[in-house]
Amino acid sequence: MSINKESDVGGDLQIGPTDLGMVRIYLAADNGNEFALDFDPEEAEDIAEELRAAAEAARAMGARPAPKGKPKPR
Image (cartoon, helix red, strand yellow):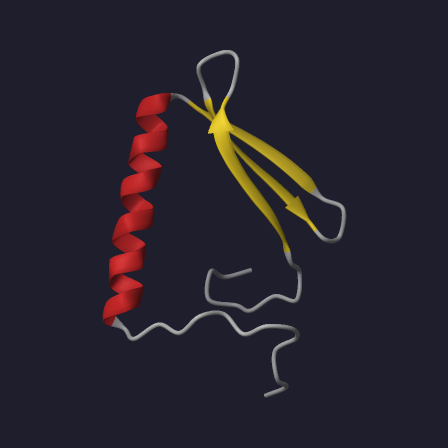
């Protein structure tokens, strides 16, 4: 799946520290798949910088909020 391909799968994202001093990104998809990704604090800061850069690029392209519900057929 490319990063630009739309998907009907929704889910939940949680981010927080673990007891071992890592930063966990926890993803739970509506289809039952769950993923826990742990990063050391430096890696988490790198990810945060990448998110900010992607947000800036999307804003520059005139990004719109994701549509609610199922996407329209093309």
